[in-house]
Image 1 (cartoon, rainbow, N blue to C red):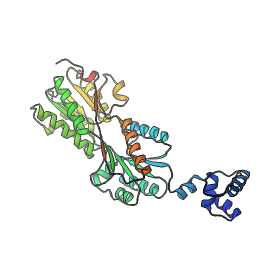
Image 2 (cartoon, rainbow, N blue to C red):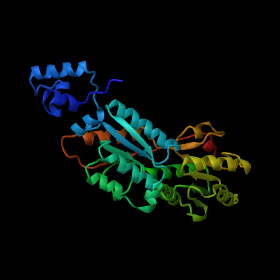
Image 3 (cartoon, helix red, strand yellow):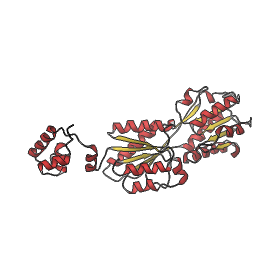
Length: 340
């Protein structure tokens, strides 16, 4: 195997700097035509191939974005990633994607690994453990070291950067109002994301809708669970109250488990129990009955976050940090299609 020739070896051959060789190979007008042609001919004869890492260090740009997603099994984050990938590719950027798996330690290690020259900037949704710990030093340090970050969905006020968020409060308020409009008199909530900022906002939106409609707020029918807690047992206790006729699930997995349980308890859906869940993934569209959802427009969030990061990277002036708020949409299906 013929060893690869490097920029350094070409520079030594002509007794010039590596920067001069790079300019010659990029057809720059900053050096003489004679020198440029000699270097280009030599590189071609020796089958030179650009070393992307070396060039990125020379140019201080890698044209690569780091993406850290907390849970790839969640269809919302999958949709966001599709938006990021498509937009980044269209803008000429590559991606290094990582999954924190809701782990603070993994998130910290990934940021430390990638921020030192591997990527130009990050697009991140904060891990659950990070939000529980309220320790954002690794992200704040990266920003202070000149690595721009765009946070999406799960954000923190302590981190001063660009952000793309969903109007979770309004989405939950809208969903609860819809259940009330279909005739629900007593609406329970199931949340396995109460540790997260988005979960707290959705519960507040639900409460606001109850208040707006002069419904009492009953904390006993707001089921708040950690990820590994027993959802089925908790829901059985709540649904033993046969007066509950509406259910708002704050994310998709709890909706699937709740639907299965409601069927086992022989509730008629939607006549006796109406349902809505957050995240308009594939599962709510293909179960029986299909489930009314709150769409967060994940793909658009990914596209927006990517545009914000690339705009900051390519701007010749210092940009003000901004937060873009994405409105949710209610997609009505069989689980709420009942007559009052």
